[in-house]
Length: 234
Image (cartoon, rainbow, N blue to C red):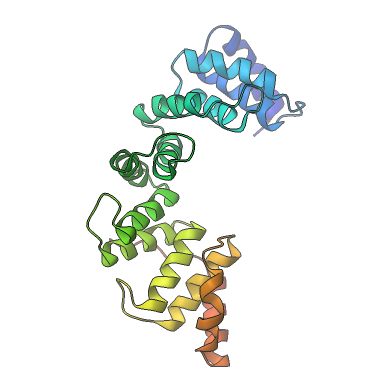
């Protein structure tokens, strides 16, 4: 992307009231893109215009500033309201973030059915972290009957989508034979993928799974873990 050229076009559109262009400029100031100095306060001004005009991406990006307290006062309730406004317009990352906030219940009141609803909406649009979250709901019987097979199905989808926590949980499921047939080789492969992807959920399982494999099996699993992710199958 040629940000200098794009910024010139966006600025003309933004000053004419184009909400997505206002978001784009705000995002550039928020991230320090296009040669712009990072300026969260100026980002917030542009994003407030975009959000007020109803742009879902502007609403989501302004929500992130309120969540982090960058350029605006930290305000979790305002962040949740903005994420919800964007989510209701079909913005998948906002649906995912709102789902997480509603499930965690740390900064806004927990609402498990609503968390599931938004996770399903985001997962339907391909958001891998929401797929993993749905697996957690089924695994922990949160608002649904406990279903280890359904949990593993969602973790597989999240894992193939590149979510490190989904990869770790799929590996754990293969290790324990929870919802899938026990498969130590597959367990080690997916635990390695999750660990390399930054998931802290893999660590407790790695050593016991590694210890149950021969050196040749370890090498095979490590080779698999370095391969491209498989395609999702229905």
